[in-house]
Amino acid sequence: SIPLSFFAGIGSASHEGVLVKGSNYLELLADTKTIVFDKTGTLTKGVFEVVAVHPKTLSTKELLHIAAHVERFSTHPIANSIRKAYSNEADSCIVSDATEIAGQGIEAMVNDHKVSVGNTKLMDSIGAKWNNCSKLKGTTIHVALDNVYQGHIVISDVIKENSKCAISELKKNGVKQTVMLTGDSKSVAENVANELKVDEVYSELLPQNKVEEIEKILANKENEKDVVAFVGDGINDAPVLSRADIGIAMGVLGSDAAIEAADVVLMDDDPLKIATAIRISKKCLTIVK
Ligand code: ADP
Ligand code: MG
Image 1 (cartoon, rainbow, N blue to C red):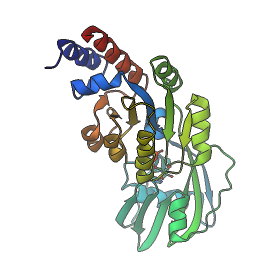
Image 2 (tube, rainbow, N blue to C red; image 1 turned 135 degrees about the vertical axis):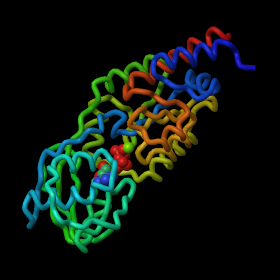
Image 3 (cartoon, rainbow, N blue to C red; image 1 turned 30 degrees about the horizontal axis):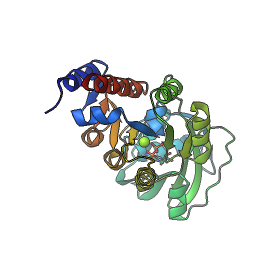
C-alpha cells in the first residue's frame, strides 16, 4: 500500500505548482542524480526576437515576408518571433503545403514557389549554399526560395531569471550532473551552458539524437538506483520525456503531447521548481523511514 505521507507529498507539491503523476515518481525524485535539460523554453524563455536581417538579393522586408508566411504554419517559438517581426500587411500570397521538419525548420509553397526556413541542416538537405555573415550572438535562421539561398534572420532568446539559481539549487539537493541538449547551434548552446554552469552540453541535435543522448546517459549510470530526469517544454520533446526515468514537462506552454508523456508537470515555467520537487520528495521519504 502507498504510505500516507506520499499523498501529503503529492498535495504539497501541487500547492507549489508541481503536479506529480504518481507516488512512484515522488519516490524516484529523491534519487535524481542527473538532470538533462532541453534549452529553448526550459532554461531560456523561448521568446525570441528578431535582431538582424541579412538578405542576399531580396529586400529586408521581402525576406521577412516570405519567412513569415511559411512560419504561419508553425507554433515553434522561433516562428512566433518571425511572424511578429513582419507586421502582417494584407497581401495576396497563397501559401500551401506546409511541412514542419522537427529540429530543422519548415517549408511551404508560396505562390507556387518553395520557401524553406530553418537551420543549416535544412539548407544542406536542399543543397542551398548558406553563409553566416552575422557577428551577433543569436540563433541564425536561413531562408531559401526554390532551393536557392536568400539570406538569414538572426533571432535571440534570453535565459530565464531563475535558471542559474535552479542549477545551483539542484546541486545542493543531491544532483551530481547537469546536461543541456539542444537543436540550436554550438555557439548559442555553449554560451548558455557557460553562463548557467551546466556540466555538459550537446548541440545541433535532431529530436531522435536527443533520445540517443538520454539512452547513453541511462546506460552509463553509476548505480542502478540513480535517477535520470529530463526537463523539456514539450515542443518536439515527447519521446525524450517518456524515455527518461522521470520526464518533467514545463507547464502552460508545453504541448498536450508533452503533458501526456511527462511524469511530472510544472504548472509555471520556473526551473527552480525542480529543486522544490526533489526537496518535497526527500522530506516524504524521511517521514516514511
Ligand atoms: P531546442 O532543442 O532548442 O528546443 P528545436 O529542436 O525545437 O530546438 O529546434 C532546433 C532548431 O531547428 C532551431 O534552433 C532552429 O534552427 C530549427 N527550427 C525548428 N523549428 C523551426 C521553425 N519553425 N522555423 C525555423 N527554424 C526552426
Ligand atoms: Mg525544445
